[in-house]
Structure formats: structure tokens, C-alpha cells
Length: 180
Image 1 (cartoon, one colour):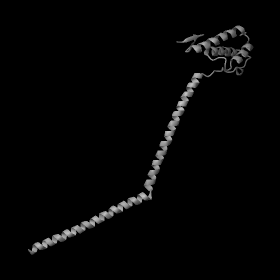
Image 2 (cartoon, rainbow, N blue to C red; image 1 turned 30 degrees about the vertical axis):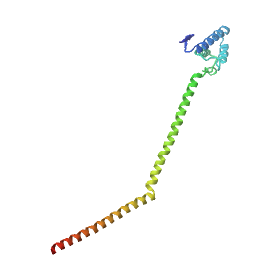
Image 3 (cartoon, rainbow, N blue to C red; image 1 turned 45 degrees about the horizontal axis):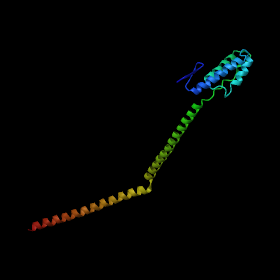
Image 4 (cartoon, rainbow, N blue to C red; image 1 turned 180 degrees about the vertical axis):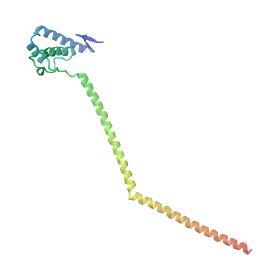
């Protein structure tokens, strides 16, 4: 349900009550003050344009009226007319703070994982570098190659020996067959 006060629509009853209170105060001020005297209006504007006086659009629009009137007075300098103070919306500030805290928490979690994963990647590169250039690994690889080469040479020797024996056996068999 919406609440209307002086042409402004409010979402909550509390905001509408505050606006009604400001509207009544503005009517009282207009009734009790000579609004045709620029000096009186200027003093009134300076007194009302401070934190704690007006919070709703009703009160702020009254300050705008006073400000516009003062701008039409030639002997009052525009620099002497202070800008209108706009109070912070407490709910909006709290909501922004909650969002900021949520983003901060997510940022810290993401930063933590980024650091951990970066450290893991650097460690993997380090291990790869050390492993690829380690004398131990190279020596081990050369040792394995030498071992297999020796094994192959030994196999070749044995194969030759077996072939020589077979050849010798074949020659004996041939010799014995000729003698028969």
C-alpha cells in the first residue's frame, strides 16, 4: 500500500508519517514567518538547511522553494546560498555496506585460491625445471641406456656363440654323413 503526502508517494507508513510531520512544520513556518522579507527567508534557509531538519522529499522540496526564491534576490550572492543538504538514506547505506562486505568476502576467498593455485603452478614449473636439468636424472638415464646396450651386446655375443655351435654341429653332422 502506498501513502501520499503533499503529492509525494511513500512506501511505508513511517516515511509517510515523517513527511506529514515535516509538512505540518512547513505550514507552521509559513504562517509564522514573513516570507516576503528576503533577509528573513535567507536566515530561515540557513537554519533549516542542516542535518536533522528535513529527511523526506516534502521537506527538501520546501528547501528548494526557499533556494529558488533566494536566487531571485539581487543583493544575495549565489555563493552565499549553500547547497541543500541531502541526508543519507540509512537503509540504502546499510544495504550497500552488506553488499560491500559480501564482495569483500568473495574477493578474499578468490584471492586465497588464486595465491594457492599460483603457488602450485610455480611449484610444478620448479619441479619440471629441476627434474629436466638434474644430473641425477641424466645420470640415471645414461646408466639405463648403458645397461641396455651392455645387455644387447651380451645377447649378441651369446647369439654368435650359439650360431657358432650350431654351425660346428652342422659341420660335424655333415662330416659324419659323408663318412657313412
